[in-house]
Image 1 (cartoon, helix red, strand yellow):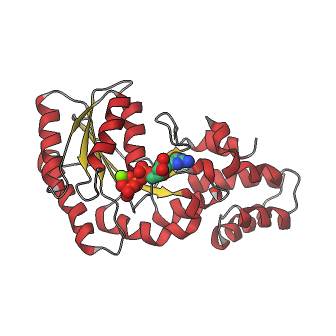
Image 2 (cartoon, rainbow, N blue to C red):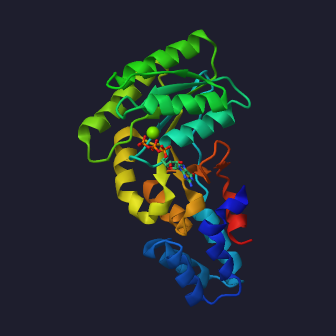
Image 3 (cartoon, protein in one colour):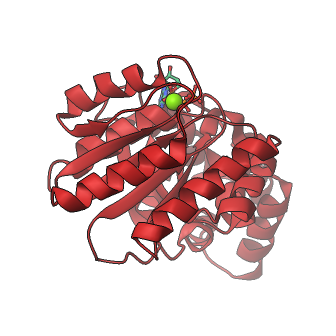
Length: 275
Ligand SMILES: Nc1nc2c(ncn2[C@@H]2O[C@H](COP(=O)(O)OP(=O)(O)OP(=O)(O)O)[C@@H](O)[C@H]2O)c(=O)[nH]1
Ligand SMILES: [Mg+2]
C-alpha cells in the first residue's frame, strides 16, 4: 500500500547526499512551502551531521502531532466534512470498511443536498457490508444524523460514520448546517463527534489551507484525511497543512477502492519518504 505513495513522496529520496541548496529545491518542489522549507533548512544547518538524517528528524518533528482523545463510550462517532469533491463519501466508505473489520458500523447519509448522494453511499455500504440510515434529498441532515445515532444506541452499534454534503467554506448557510449536525450529535454524546474529520484533496497542495482553516475554526476539526495522495506530486504540502491548521493527519487516501486508506503513522510515513 505504501508503494502507492511513490508519486507523492518519491522526490524526497533524492535528498540523499544532496547539498543544502539541493534539499531546499526538492522541498519547495514537493510543495512544503517557503515558510517550512526555510525553517527546516535553518534547523539542519545549525547542527552537524548528515543533512538527510537531520532532515528526516525535522520532518518527523513537524508531523508528529497528538491524535485526538477518544471518549470510549459507545458509539464512536466519526463525522466527515469537506469541500465539494474532496473525497468525503469515498473516505466514509473506506473508514466503514476498516472499522467493520473489528466493530459493528452504521453509516449516516448526511448529504441531503446533492442528487443521488444517498444512493452513492448505499452502494458503498453494500460493498463494506455495513448498515446505513438513509435520507432523501432536501431532508434535514441533522435529523438523519440524530436517527442514525439513536438507532446505533438501540442496536448496540459501535461506530457511526457520518457523510455530509460538500460545501465551499464561503457558504455560511451550509457551514451553519454542519454546526447544527454537531449540536445534534452532542445531544446524544456530549463529547462527540469523537473524530471530526476534514477531507482535503492532496492534489491541491498548499492551496487547500485557506478553505480548510474556515472548517477548523467553525466546527473544530480534530483530524485530517488527505485524499488522492496517490495522484499528487505535492505530498510535501502535508507539512504546512498540518502545521498551519494545527490538526494531525489521521489517514491518507491512496486510491478509489474501498481498501485504499493508510493510517497515518509519523514514523512509517517519514521512513517511506526516504526509502
Ligand atoms: N485517486 C484517488 N481518487 C479518490 C480518492 N478519494 C476519492 N477519490 C475520487 O474523487 C472523486 C470524488 O470523490 P467523492 O468521495 O465522491 O467526493 P465527495 O467529497 O463525497 O464529493 P461531493 O459529495 O460531491 O462533495 C471520486 O471520483 C473518487 O473516486 C483517493 O484517495 N485517490
Ligand atoms: Mg459525497
